Image 1: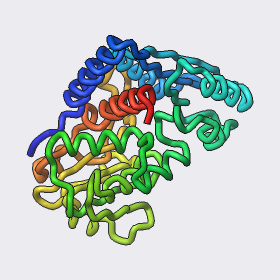
Image 2: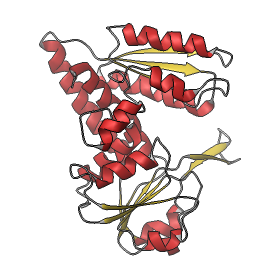
Image 3: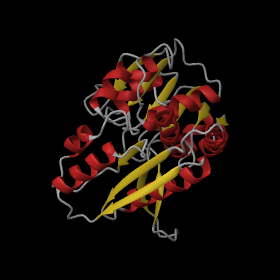
Length: 289
């Protein structure tokens, strides 16, 4: 069993990005600029945005953080999106999800200029991705295919099972794993209404678990030599931790890992690659398609 080290891989890629940014600026080019809009004080979102700011520094990007309280109106947020759309210095920006219930998330996503949508959530980017056109790819799926490539994990012709069908991970992940230039695999998507998830998983060469249920994937669901990618990051109460919680993946790591050829840990697997992919998208936005 080989552990897939997302943290080390992400650091290496950020160093590569930083070198490219140096070259761009030395040639008189513009410093890439990523902006983030954060609404409220959700703990997970605060941590995520903080890590994005740190990543920007490592990559040599300019970063801007715009904060709003939970009671911000939808119109105020839409006005902020419009300002960022029209700010020529901002190459890409994200509106951190989730948003308060009184705000229509999809309306906000669709208001973002797709050419600055470095989260890859806008319908235009989703549509272009689905038919293999240049676009911004959702950061977590992009991070996963990057990890598979960096570890020289064979995907072509393999059976890949994606657990979960969210717009952020499951659906785009399945699309990428099908496409020739990324996975070229035979893909099955499983969800809450799949008749026999265990059977599907046992036949899989690659399992990508993005279902949001801690320890859902157990040893009896995984065949010998499978590749297991764990996207889960559920906060589970843990009195032994200073924070009062720990991050738990969708995979029961201790019992599944011995059966795997490759497996990602939680934390330190997919998570760092998500932020790294956002940096790659921002550099792409700065360079143009």
